[in-house]
Length: 421
Image (cartoon, rainbow, N blue to C red):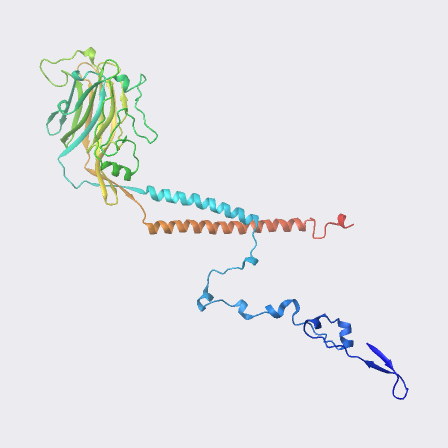
């Protein structure tokens, strides 16, 4: 405020300047630049501009927090406010999650199944006996059949006295087209009607494919199934059971009464010959219904009364091993022949077997938990690295395409010329 007054002698007026109060604190920040000079306000910038006085640029903001060890952190982090989430990144994350689950499930399944190795070696052990397990149906009455074994040692075994023989009907076992009626269930096991039962589980026992399943079922005692109830007049004979034989080459044969061996007073008319047969089970060693053999569910029909069926089997001792558990049994390869013969040749069903001097060892191995965990980590790491590179590559491609579009006359930041005019 300015006041004009007369001097002491009435001379020129004197100009009194009433100094305004000096601005302090926050009010000083509101001085206008031009009037600051006139009124003595300091024109220097405010030290609290944009709040910099409170935040400031400090060296500690760029240094490692915490102990000295944190300075060696190989996994730097970004603050949440500096991270941007995009739809492209979300899609890649979902894809990586799906791929990871598929690969992890595959790895877990492979680990659970384990891996099998097959090794051949010369059989070191010496054994003198061999068990044979047979379950067959021949389309002739039981009283008209003879079952015998003749081995290379010269021993003849009357197998008919050691095996079970039950009257049955052919139509219950095979169809008119020669197909085995006893099919398999959803798990690959034979459905017999009566059931291949074991004393422990009381369930069907065919079709196990993994070594650990075979070994587990092999520890349970098994028994033969009962013959299904006969429907209609019996026209066939079911021969089944187990025999202990010499562990040498031999012949197991089924012939008609009075043929093959000279037995006085017993002779069967040739018109009653019918050696059509069904093989439900033929195995060597201890009886394990869970093992599927080459001749299981074989159906062969005879085209004439004098018909000869020959099977040549090479038996290979086999041991299944899972960890500390083992199961010893035998496998075999088979070659079959069948033909009509003259009356000078004995018809029937003949099994010629030979024991191979080798041992097949089938081992099932499974990685330890530590190795399995390392494999899972490797799978996840690979998916993460591949996903990161895929995301980076797609973002780079999108950026290159965007630059091309802008440089080729596309719409810029302020619009095109037409819109501007």
